[in-house]
Length: 64
Image (tube, rainbow, N blue to C red):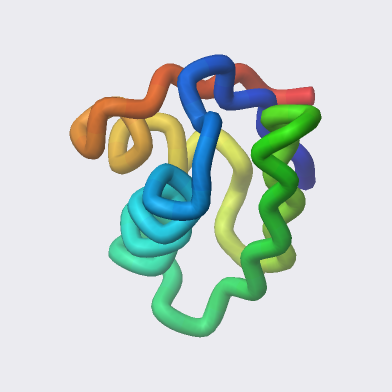
């Protein structure tokens, strides 16, 4: 699954996004590209499960 996170602009943001995703699924694989603001997640959880955790961490995400 992929997310677009408009305010993910640096390595610190990438770490925050990864932490937020892994609060929902600690085994999730996260690949983030701050230049394109795209995050690819491999998880057994549905994509909608990650949106509240990302929002709580300060990252507004849309599912791609």
